Amino acid sequence: MSKTIEIIVTAKGETAITTKGFTGSSCRDASKFIEQALGQRLDEHLTPEFHQTAVTEQQQQQRS
Image 1 (tube, rainbow, N blue to C red):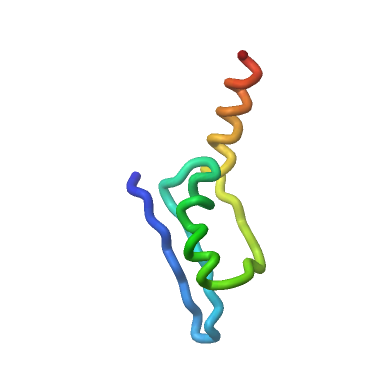
Image 2 (tube, one colour):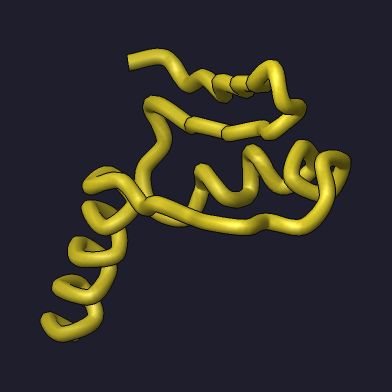
């Protein structure tokens, strides 16, 4: 899956950023510059892909 960042701007000027194709916190790194340009974040919804890498990293640490 290719990595994309989708920015939605409503008629009221509200924005939403959606990342696709990223795993773990790499989505935050990729969209950070956009969030900084838009201003304060009001809400955040984490996708299953965000938690996917976090679980994998935790399992690897437990094996060590």
